[in-house]
Image (cartoon, rainbow, N blue to C red):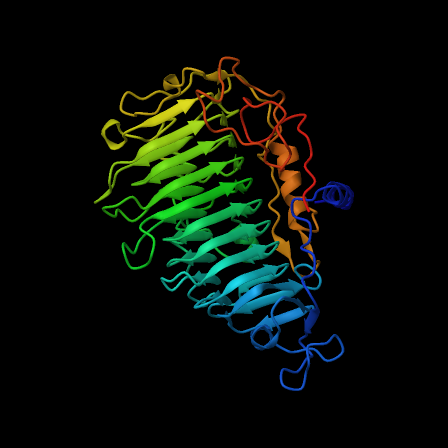
Length: 494
């Protein structure tokens, strides 16, 4: 990558982030207290001149309703937070991504009575290939006390033997926004959402690039996000519920052929593992030669709405769009709705996997799905015929308001992954922060030529129309498809 390109990307980064407020820094809360690698826990008082040394000690000591500012440096060891802050606590890296939290075990865990806490601006990662189990854990302990937790603008990467982030066992009201995730362990996820409620995953960047972290591509890693309930009645929730996955970007697949970007349900339980799940305004890019099962999958779940997403590029897979199945002891999936999406494969090989020559839109056997709706979606297979299988229940032919047109999305074959370089304090795509990398991906690869819609489609036939688009801008017409809305209105957010 040449210097002129990097300078150009840096200028674009500054310009687009300066005018964007979706991921603007969180204002300081109350009084500022300080942590430094040069501080002292027992002799310090948390002032800038006499800071504490560790986050763990500081969280126990700091008064409610204030901000803990963490200075530049590497903080090694497990950080456990189990305290309720009624007025709130903001834990913030003084300079984004220059405070690194790392360990050869869990790095950060919020458990027991952790509540009303925001964690912002850190690099969070394992520091050894033998590290385990996972990097970051929000564990509800089966009670209603772990709640109102926000993870914001963090680089969360390289778990070697488990998930990057697990949210489970009864946690509630969790927001994961404006972060970057990459490189989980084999058979594990970026985010495991398991038996919880009211979870919002928004404005994040998800990808894998194992070689840039000096790791091998084993083709064994699992989906980027899984939403499920693997513990039956062991906590207060029976099936994860009210889960929102919106305005995220997924790309550079390097995982198992049996997995995909987002999976709802996984463990073959005899109950619905998830319900009331809304997945919208996301951009999913096929820029890898490694095959997946499908970018979006549902197993034993109900009331799942997948709408106004954009899936673009050559995406080697069993199914270019969706897989819905009933496995093991699962109840049959029902009320699966796919509205207003763009599926665009400029290579004309929609749904052709590495292990088969046929083209497939879905991987959904007739007897394994009850109710579903496919309506007002755009399909493009480079002028080739759209996939159809007599064995599958979901085919483009089921969409009586379908749009067949070339959206003219950007060519993502040579996409540069925004892997973080902690030595230069810059992402490999030339960005200096996560939001700049996010906006560049949207503007380069997610902007269609027109706002496509069907005139006869209205809110009575399609109940799901987001008010905003992938950039958080207000949609000015209601019936368009895809994640990005041309000529949208900017919404200034505090």
